[in-house]
Image 1: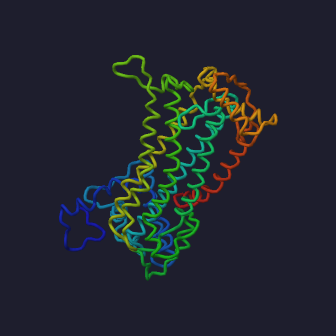
Image 2: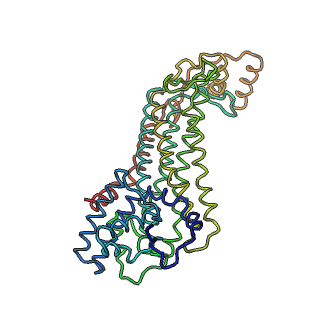
Image 3: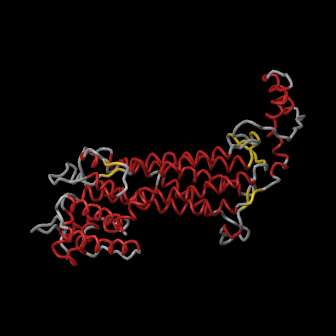
Length: 445
């Protein structure tokens, strides 16, 4: 059995080991290539301050790059008896390079190592989430423009209320995603600060060059105060999870609308048959299971900030093993949300809309406000116009004019989709992913 990085002469009790390691080995596979990236930056800095020779640096970099590509291909494993990803990487280096492999841990602790891994992982996953969300945004805005002239009932209290349109419906969710990514941009900036060099949370007596590792890894800045760097464990995950929850909330609401609008009682949209599932006993059923599962998965993701808060909210400053449990709920959430975004994008691209919804007489009263407004424009005081139309409705004498003339910004006749597009582009530009991508490429080339 491989020795642990911290183990000396006394071996820990087996049951204690199983309990304390928990799912760490499984979760650390998410972090493997990011652990290697951080190590490449760290040893480059160590050589610059005289803790490694140039020859040692060259041999360590070459081996670390091999491990990186193993992880990139999904072939990296954490062996039985090895506690975590950090131990596995050091073990692999020591097998090939002997004592040189043992030198990579100088000036750092597993505390700042995992902090760094989590930040590198998270900012990469944020980029994937943002790009997928932008694809969905594009589909929604295209659909909004395509169906801008097709009217749709608007509801308040689930009662028929006022005319809406598919242009408004699709466009509303597009703009919601722009706001969601604005929050994600703020979370990304909090994530994109370097904790490496904080060691166990109190710095190091080695003359570390933290600015150098920050630059090598493409960070906006470092977490300056070493105690705060450790206090950021859990805070970063909670902050990012709020941004994930924002996107999830938009998808969940859209999924609810889609399920309801697809039902026979509404009939506003129709999902292609191949996007639905059937019943084991009812041959006519075509169920919107993708949207139902999306709703459930996204509602689960919306609980993530609370889960992380409950794990961390009664911890003082410093490191505690409680923080390990955050990985179990946080790391898998990205892939789950990515799957939901991909499926919703696919579905919304292919959904068919009903062009004749408002021909059903049950939607006649949708146009009551339009009639009130027409009377007001002709000089009738609003309260009198409201009463007149209300009395006509009660008497069964209301005959609507179904022509809609909305011109103000963001209304049926003036969707302002071009402005929504500009808004989203500004948000996308705020991430500046290319800085990080270029830095990471330089490290592994």
